[in-house]
Length: 423
Image 1 (spheres, helix red, strand yellow):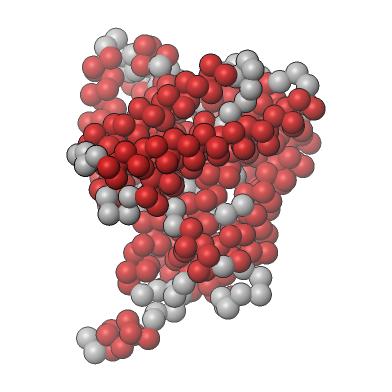
Image 2 (cartoon, one colour):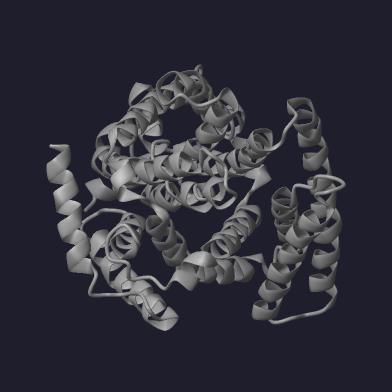
């Protein structure tokens, strides 16, 4: 069976070799034209378009088609970091702390508890089956642990608009938005544990880097927010200024890392949150601009992650073990979700739907999955392959389960029920 799979990929590689990635513009043209057209088709058949982007990257990457300019692959880590900045800024701009407070305990717990349960599950079973260290297992768990707002949030908005589930969509949206932030912070903390020589120094640096990141974000956020209030700038200029400031924060982290650790990514989230609070009149326009930026970088991000994937490794024995670890991690995540909704007004069917909504993984996995590989960590190929497997397996599964079950598992609001009865 393994030989047949290997022969199939050799045939596919020969077929795709006609692309021959000798030009940066040819590569970018293929990525965007094929990405957009294929994404439309995938959405028509109810499969998240990001799955197509990932498959396209695998087909065009060195494993198969070799249709991407090597120079583009060399700068892919920088492009992924820009995409991560856009994701985090969008999260900060859209994060409504009042919603968390209004919904209460379940929303707050869902911001971190399911992800922590999943990381614990991977840290227990990863060393047993993958022969990796416990710190590497924590890193792997943090990559797998994030839920995907790109898959979840649009569906929750649709449920809310159609009157399904009461407060359930708000709980899931609030939890999913914060879940990513928590996981990214943990990922960088665990990456330092893996790459640094002494565990004690790494553990001491984690809280310090978080505190400094928050203080940096508050200071810059107040400055940017005040500037936007006093000087009426076009939305495009505001977005460019926020992007520029975000890049400067990352540069500051790089310059200072020999002396002190600063979580620039956390600072970017805090900055965006403060700008949102200080500029409530214009924040929707800034959000819209960042969403438009993301539409382009989303394609690049997922295609380049697909390009970096060794498809033969994914279909090897290790790939099968990774799929098993992923299934175990989802069980732990589900236990964490159930604990979050324990003793809440949600009935059994609604709790099942919340489980489904917390399955999809995509955006964060694509953003941070290749970082360990690009930084030369020994577990890099394993982490990247696990991120790709997680996206391909859980994104369509979670989307499919939500789409086919919401009418059976969730109740319509009385107003919507009356409207349907009246025709």
